[in-house]
Length: 400
Ligand SMILES: Nc1ncnc2c1ncn2[C@@H]1O[C@H](COP(=O)(O)OP(=O)(O)OP(=O)(O)O)[C@@H](O)[C@H]1O
Ligand SMILES: [Mg+2]
Image 1 (cartoon, rainbow, N blue to C red):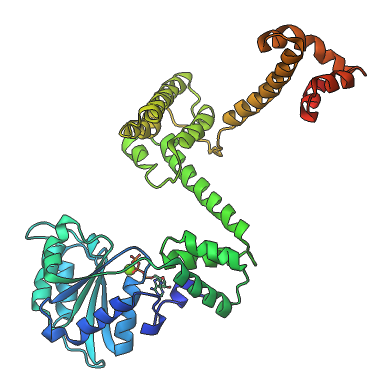
Image 2: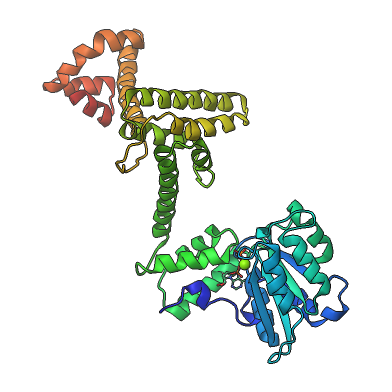
């Protein structure tokens, strides 16, 4: 079995850790001088995929300490924390220099004032003989307030794009992945400080052989379509407004665009005319609010727009369409645009006629153009075109 690259290249030694040098030093100090610490636990926090878990593992590994790993999301309740952490914090480690207890994702613990996972954890910390390192993505939740005061706080940073690039480059060399430097740089920037995401992207891109920057663009386009597709599925196939309302949370797309997607797919999804009528009513309301937002910058209306588009459309149906439909972005706007382009050409020609014939554009459009157009089906067209100084495109339009 081949390991995913993120696991294969997870930091084993301190020198494997990208960035976070100050942070690593502090973890080391905390673990080494645990008996002298005022705060009996450490609380590490920071953005996802920047090496929080990996750093603790690497430090323990390099110091030859036993690492007891507990994932708080799996052990939400009091009992589990007391049993697992409580035992580990008292028993001596026979084969190692020492012991570190790492409790990952403490944001996942249940918390009430004096009950639940958080309070059990606090109790265990106060009695522990070994250093306890907690990790959270967001440590500023109310339920973690006591843990914050009892812990030495340590913030991890997003990893700079340049450091991500270096790491990816190295992995490419070791794995013999071929990709252009430009693509690698673009991938590093797109990761937004998340090295795990960057390595995962690299792995999925490299499955198709050598890749270039353009391939990345198609990847993000694919991701976007996937996420909006899932959201639409929830809206169209469920009648529970709560499910529907949540669906746009992760979609990285303007509400205007979302509206167009729904607009295009609605007639295929909803077959009952009354369902359609209700759904389009919500769509048109969203449109009204979007216009108000644009005109007056009333951003709070965005909430209405998003609720109309999701919950509103979902509850509009009396029956669900069991068929699976492939959702598409609207083609209507494109059609309007093309029609406008055509109209613009017509108008431009009329303007030229109006100037030569000393009349209004409107008059030229209505009373002269219809008589000029047929000339372009004959050999007189060329002379007219020269006289009016028409462009090739305009001539082409007249010839049609
Ligand atoms: N600073 C780093 N140095 C080396 N590798 C890293 C670093 N950050 C992330 N990685 C890579 O990403 C993977 C995930 O990192 P890690 O689990 O340490 O992130 P995390 O900060 O704990 O993320 P999460 O908040 O999602 O738990 C690692 O296995 C490694 O491949
Ligand atoms: Mg982690």
